[in-house]
Image 1 (cartoon, rainbow, N blue to C red):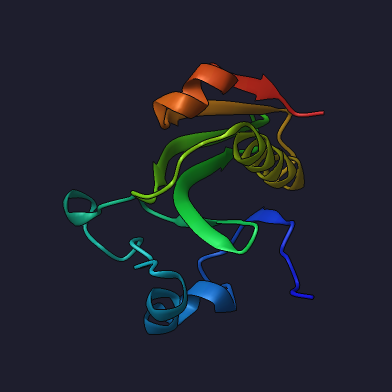
Image 2 (cartoon, one colour):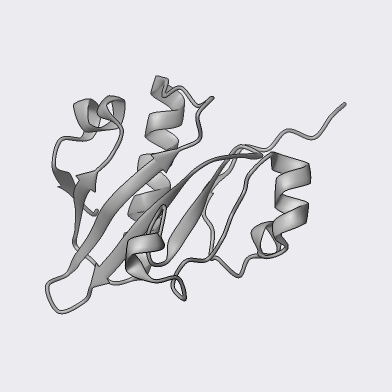
Amino acid sequence: GKLKSTVTSLLSPFDPVVWDRRRALELFNFDYRLECYTPKEKRRYGYFTLPVLHRGELVGRIDAKAHRRQGIFEIISFHAEPQVRFGKQRTQDIRQAIARTAKWHGAQRVALGDIPAALAAEWGAGWEVG
């Protein structure tokens, strides 16, 4: 049998899966670049985007900011890869990965900004972290 990935996570820009840009492109067809050193007007995805690994596939990137004093984990934007469709399981898995990351940052709430319409329809403006 084949091993099947069942995990969805937000990755650090320094995760070995993506820090070698050429490898991420060759293995996942995912062109990743940390844009914090890129002038704001030249950024494509955001200051410090977190790749979204869903069950062995890189499906997008999230530009997020933890507002620790306010207890809010803000999703500034979510850029899905062009081929990605959001079914029920994928939507639920990504929400859980965001919630885990928010909780790790000590946030009590996730606030959503510019996200794909399919996710906005399911998630609204955000949710409380349990």
